[in-house]
Image (cartoon, rainbow, N blue to C red; front, top):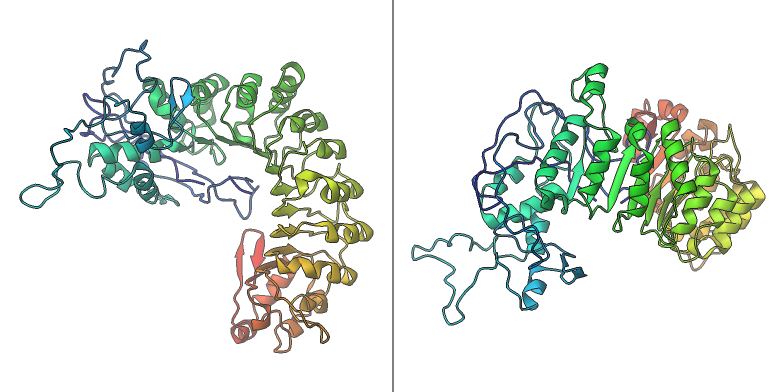
Length: 564
C-alpha cells in the first residue's frame, strides 16, 4: 500500500564560499556503479507495501556518484553556539523549509510566513522601500535572480523541480538526474530549491552510495535535516561490483554507520528496509526508530526475517519503555515471518494514529488485532496469508472495531491449499458489514460461491478492485454487470479490476466469455479494464488471437502474473 518519490540524487560539493556556491565542479568517479533504486512494487517479487513512491528500477550508471569527493569544506556560516536565528541555511538564495523550527517553535509554512514574523534573516535581500525594484535590465533581459521562474514562491518552484527527478532511472551507463544537476549550476535560488529535491528522498542502492551519503551529511549536518525518507527497500548487496569478502571488509553499511545516519537525519519521516540488510538492524537502531525520531510516520521492514532482527526487535519491546503514543501511522511487517506474536501485541497498542497496517504472512493473532487502539483510522489493512488469525475474529473486528470503519483497501486473500480463513457462513456475515469507503477488496482463496453474489452486488457500486473466491462461475460474474429484469433502480458497477485467478478455464467458460452474449468483455461492463487470470487460463487465452481481436482486449504478463 502505499506511503511518494524520486530516485536517489547525485550530491555535489562546491568550491569556496558562501555555501553552497554557484560554481560546482562535477567530478567523475569511474569505479562506482549504482544499482537498484526506489520503490515500485515488483510484480514477481515480494511486495514492498505501503510506500508512497511509485518507481523501481535497476541503475547501472558507472559514472554516477552520490557525492563528489575531495573538495574543500566551506567555512561555517555562523557561530555554532549562536541562537540568533535558530536555523542553519545551506544556501544564499534559500527561502525556508516547511515546518522549519525557530527557537524551538514551528513557526513557518513558507518563506512568506517567515518574513511576516518581522525578523529579517541574513539571506533576505534588503531593499529600500522608496526605490522600485527593476525586474529587467535596459536590454530587456531579466536581472540576475529576477527571472519569472526564480521569483515563484518556493512551494511552487519546488513542485516544478520535483517533476525533473527521474522516476525510472535509465539502465546502462547513462547518468540520471542530469537536469537537476544542471539546475544546481544555474543560480542561487534554483540551487536552493534543487537541494530540497535531491536530499528529500534518499534511495540507497548499495553500500558505496550509503557511505558517500553518510560522509556528506556528516560534513554538512544541515543537509541531513532536509532528508525525509531513507529507502533501502531495493538495496542490492551485489550491485557495487564487489565480492562478498570485499563487502565484508569495507563495512560501509553496518549497525554503527546506520545508527549514525539516523542521528544525522532528525526530521526523518519514512524508513524502508528489506531482507538484505535485516542483519544490520540492531536493538539500538530499532529503539532509535521507535523512540528517538518524533516525526517518523512510516516504518517498512518488508521480508526482514533474520534471527538477529527478531532478537533485536524483541529485546527493545521487552526492555524499553515505549512512549504511550508513537507517531507512526504506516507500519509494514510484510513477510516478517520470524517475528513472534508478542511483537504485535506489544507494539500495536502504542499506535493510536495508525492508518496503514501490512501484516501479510505474519504471526499476528486475534488478540493483537483487537489491541489496535480505537482512535486509529485504518484505511489500508493487509491480513493475507495470516494463518494465526481466525475467521470469526476477523469478521468481528471488521464489523465492530472503530478503527475499521474507514477502510479503503482490505486484503484477506488466502492460499486455499494451506489455510482457510473465512468459511462460507463467515463470508456471508462479513460482506454486509464492510464500509462504503472501501475501494479495493481481495477475498481470493475464500469459499465464495453463487450465494454470496447478492451480498457482493451492493459493494460493486463503490469497489474498483475485487478479488473473487474459488467457487464462483462465469454466470455469477455476469450478474455483477447486468441488472435483473425487475430491477428499476440499477446502478452501474464501478469495478475496474477483477482477480479471477482462482477460477479454472471450465469455471470461466472461455467460449462463452468471448462470445457476443457475455457482457463481461463488452461495453456493459465498463469501466472494467483488467481481469487477472490463472496460468492455466492465460495459456489458453494467449493463443486465441482472433477472439482477442474480436472483443478488443489483449493479454499481458509479468513474472508469475498475467492479465486480460
